[in-house]
Image (cartoon, rainbow, N blue to C red; front, top):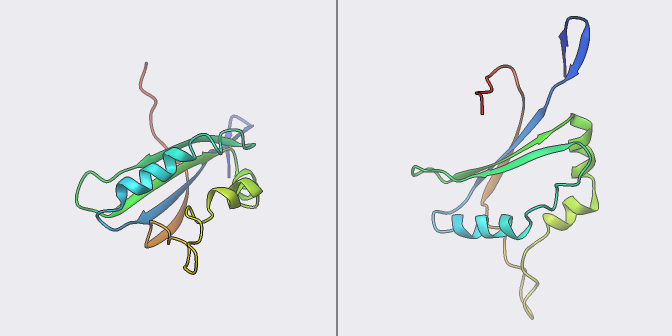
Length: 122
């Protein structure tokens, strides 16, 4: 979406939030897996930033927040080999067994754009 200011078009940041529900004892593993992939998306065209938010109460939902220049940049990343590589199963198949399951038991993708806020002085 574009924001009009005095006749000029300014691109709005697109925010994608992946809400991942994990078992109570699996949060550390989720954080470890994200740390192992740190920087993997940094050079993707249109990528503006990332945070992994850990709940500080008894919730089981962690939030993965990414910011993108536009929807097309996000879609290009999701369609990229880098995305597929980063979201494959973390564990190789065991002999005669299956791959280790993902840490999350469910996830939901939410999409937002900035509608207001403030930037406090540094």
